[in-house]
Length: 262
Image 1 (cartoon, rainbow, N blue to C red):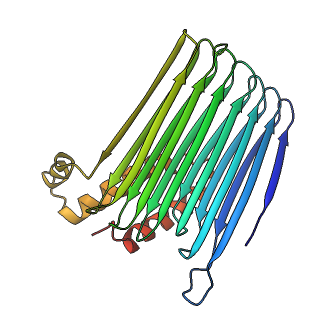
Image 2: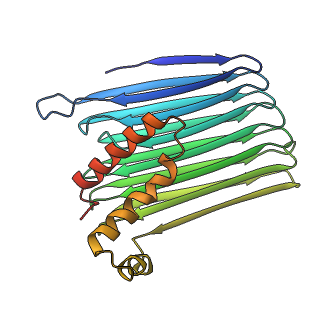
């Protein structure tokens, strides 16, 4: 068992970029293990945080992750997450906007293979005027025994007038009996807001495959391109070029290994 805890305090007008990565030895002879990590951000007024979170633990592991974010006035927090490892992986993400004119942007991508569970529970609380938030969650479930969960809650309290909040979750199921449970959730008490949320769950669409086939692309290449591009929308938001290339290469290998590429 590993229980790392990190506290990051960003002072007024400060700017920081954090890369948080978890990896493990997936050799069959290795024992199962459990990582139980906590990261907390305390952001003063006008602070800016870019947070890249890469979870690629061994498939015989359990990974439980807590992230707490407290945002001061005019601060900006951006999260880009890719989660592909672990037999059981869960991210509990709690964010509170502590002042007006605050920006929160969340982009997450999960990939589930055989007997894996990928789980995201997020909660964003807006208590002040002119808050802005965007949340995009995408998930690929590539095996009949795999399961994904998304429980996203955005709460806009009475004083959070002129809030602009958007939430979208999209899931791609590539095998019979593959499972995803999604619950996008907006709780709005303020009356002068612009808020939206949506959810979509599907397999690859025949029209998309036909578009490629009509241009001379074979079925396998077309399918592989569509599956990878589904998650690439999140991966391309990683702020560091070298990290982005590494993650994209790892995801391509995992998609092939998990049977998503045929």
